[in-house]
Length: 524
Image 1: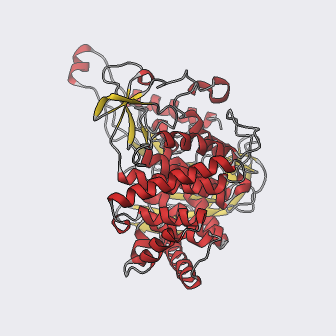
Image 2 (image 1 turned 180 degrees about the vertical axis):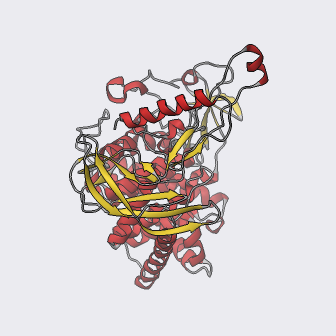
Image 3 (image 1 turned 30 degrees about the vertical axis):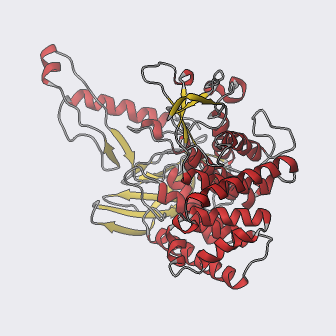
């Protein structure tokens, strides 16, 4: 995606206006656009020095589009926001500068809190590949967008490849990762935080943040999300992602999960079966975080039970590729399970329900089924299903197992899932941004959880309405939001790089795993 000349002209014109008006405040936004940023001003110090400090306010369009674009055959929607709204809009082909579509602005509503009118427009009939922008009276122009086949393919590949880029312990190839390439990091043994004389080889795994820390709980949850994505839509995942394992006749998503699983195995205490919580870098005062020493935090029961769930799921899918390795994995998962139950009750953490579901599917052992039955018998199970992701994901696993299951319970679980998804769908249809959640504080956790739930339901019981709602959530993430910001990629006109915190959702490994899940269901 490129930044077209219309955007450059806006910036130049804004700069000229600001230079002419000097320090007059309140000259930021026209009737067509909303201003985000500070008014122009001159500080006392700068005035005394005869220097002017000019900050050009950001102009947010009143026409909000998915800056990445729309699939040819998908439902296509645009949002309008302004003090006054037009009745129609036009779509202009950027190559020919000709109007190629005229549509109606519909369903206008007034929001008293923001003092704006909101409306939508649809252009499903426009199916010609190309680069476009939208114009409407009173509001001006939108950012540009594409219409193409498989519009999500590049974003999906980028989301999947984030995990290779985040690999620890090996050299990351510039040929495969571009500017993200680097030499091998954290190759020396780590020491225990509680006993610096004890060292352990924990080479591998994924970095979870800009401190290059690795976390077993997060790693386990991410592995589960990636494997759930694979389970729901195997056809979306090939063996040509562009990682070192590509071409080995194993789907690259499983290769990537295995890289983390190999590391998780190193984090298991061979004496107890418990799992160390994290491998943290000690980079105080060091310029190079990749060269910093590493310390292991104490064994964590929450990490241990999550480890058991993730490895059981991985073993289930890896059996067909390497039965011996998969068997060793399920044994490690069972050891973690026993360690957890030696220290806590299964009822004390709902993660035990999810782990029991994974272990039961992989082995058929009645000891895991007993824990499932215990949870199914709880009077608050439906409430937990609606509020606790461990229960939701464990229930979905139970529905997909080939082991003996209670059909009445399965019927109840389907009913709970449909009810939860219908509520998400209703919240989205009632929202002015067509999403279940409008993110105002940078916290996308509920937003992403809703996407995952709806994607799961859409896989089990396909519903075109659900597909459209899922796509609307993606449109929101890529520009159809209050800030007109693309939170996923950096190649469009207004992206996370323009925000103060530079919040790229795909740079958060856990959030990225749900984006992978979401896109795998849309990448047809």
